[in-house]
Amino acid sequence: MSAKKRVRQNIKHRARNRARKQAIRSEVKTFITTLGAGQMQQAEEALRKAVAVMDRVAVKGTIHKNAASRRRSRLTKRLNAAKAAAASGKGTTAAKA
Image 1: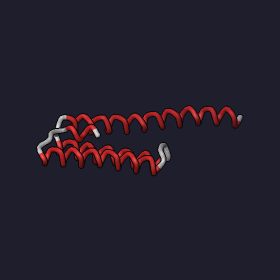
Image 2: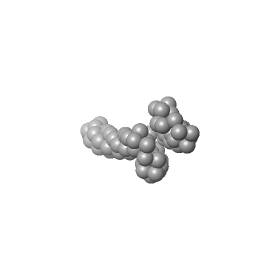
Image 3: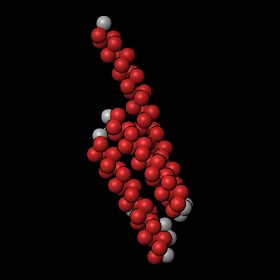
Image 4: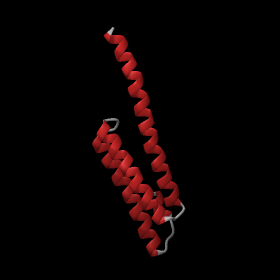
């Protein structure tokens, strides 16, 4: 009986985890798209949303908190590089770093 219950639980957990990871991917894609378009204000807002989703998913245990931190750091680094490039007048080449 308990093996059957574990199978049912695994199916539920897998579905939840997949949905949570998809939410992260969607938010990150939105951020990268707006950053690539050179829309810094929208990119900052998209980054805030992506970070919020990542942190929420990390708290739930779907991804490790250090993985969320690492991704957050890398996305922030991209935003800062794009801002610096835009400020120096080089365009969005740094956003691809």
